[in-house]
Image (cartoon, rainbow over the protein chains, first blue to last red):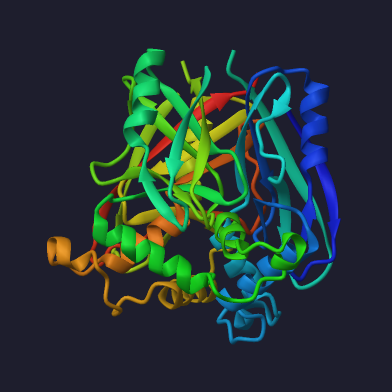
Length: 137
Length: 137
Length: 137
């Protein structure tokens, strides 16, 4: 079963908790056991997990700024004369896909393990997230 | 088919080879061809691959220490007054999921490509690892 | 359905666009909807996505050089007296697997979101890439 949803972001490594949205799609599917693939379309966003609290959100933003600083020179800026070289590099490191097990129609994730969308682009965006559910029964 | 196993770790970016455990679950399933999803529950651990030998284990621990040093200030420490901000950040970068192809009931991995659990937490932990097998036949 | 293809690389964080190859395997399968798992065998290569243009390729190579510099000391070099410690570390951070949704027999990726093989090894290599297609219908 495949479906999608959209998320509005502020860009600039905005980090958004999408756990409830993914679980609600799983709930509606009524599929009991298997894996769920989550995928964000686009080359300047990524998916991961974090304990979703404001301190860690900031810690995570700081580590991406350290790995690929926003104001560094990027060769990519010569291609389109834009400013999002850091966004692409960060997205390639994190990747846009996750595959998560579920059982009894519930995501098998920890209490403090929220699914997050990170939008690395330098301005606000509307993101499409694809969800594919595969039964293992 | 879905099952799980537990691994005791020493924490502190302890790196444990779980290849044999995953292969033995696949062997017992008797499923011949497909993909196997491996997932560690919790927000301070991750999964990847490495040629499992002591030198590389140390090299990998050193690069995580460089990316997110243990003794740096983390905003997260103000939330619970604990000390594992680095563990969360490292885990979010690495992610807790892997999806691996298999054929003839064997993991399709290289000779030097071992599956590893990395426990980034600052103390020893017991980790639950979920394994889901999906046939492609 | 499972198949594989081979790619010749120059090593040294060579970045190769494999999107067309993966899409052509999907086209030939005639499977309409599901997920496709892509996996590179070996411990010194990885898979991700990028807007495939020369500037970003160079930006991405530079960030890997910053994270795990080629000429740094690696404990791994004592094991085999070789020089590819950086290659292993980079590959463990990036990981060798991707799982991508598809619909109407087409990969659900963005216009600027190409699938890439990154070969981190220090010399040219021939890489085997496994493709497994799982229907969700």
